[in-house]
Structure formats: structure tokens, C-alpha cells
Amino acid sequence: MGKSGKSDADRQVLIGKVCNLIRIGASIHSACLATGLDNAEIEALANDDEFLQAAAQAEAQCEAILLKRIADDGGWQGARFILERKLRLAAMADGSASAAAAAGNAKQPVKVRRIEYYDPDVEG
Image 1 (tube, rainbow, N blue to C red):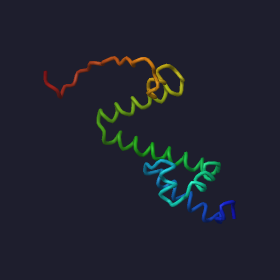
Image 2 (cartoon, one colour):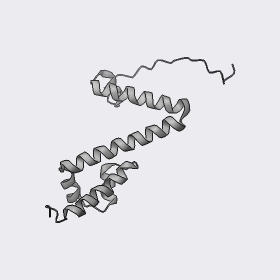
Image 3 (cartoon, one colour):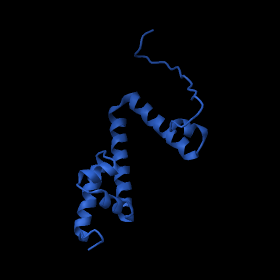
Image 4 (tube, rainbow, N blue to C red):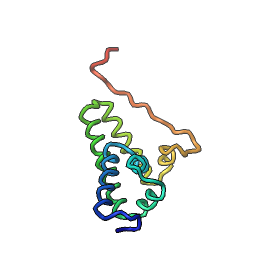
């Protein structure tokens, strides 16, 4: 038994339930609350390396599933969303000024360049 009084098997089931909710889009905190955890139990999980790794994997799986769905169903809008998201995340990872703008923390307005393109399906 761990500190929380749950057996390892019960803990694994709990982690599985939380991760299943994360995989379908819930935040880690919401998934913990939805499984009936109280604040002390959530805090304990937040310091559990095994849980954190499982939750991170579940978040990555959720992201992959959603991005695949967008890519499969989204047409050019979906492709645009994925590209904008990748560029925003790359800028944030670089720590550049555009990263602050992407995160909404910029003191300066963000300049956006309009790109004109030809769409054969649109007249005029």
C-alpha cells in the first residue's frame, strides 16, 4: 500500500481511468476530479513520476488523435490550423518575441502579413 492507502493495483486502475479521460480531451485536473479524487489525492499524483509520465503520454495521444482528425476532415482549414499551431509552438519553444505574442503576453501589437492565393473554386 502507498501513502494514500490504495493498493498498487487500485492505483494503476485509477491512473488508467484518469489517462483515459485525458486521452479524450480532459485536462489533467478535470480528469482527476471526474474520477472522484480530492485535492490531497490530486496533489499526491502531481508528485508521482509514474503518473506524470502516463498523463503526458495520454496528452500526446489525445493531441495526435485530434490532429489526425483535423488532417483527415479539415480540408484547407484543418491544414491551416495545424500549420499555425506548429509555428506558434515552435516560436514559443525558441523563446522569441513572437513566442510572447503567440502566448498573448506581448506588449507590442502582433503584425500579421496577409497572404494572397489563387483559389480556383472561387469566382472573381
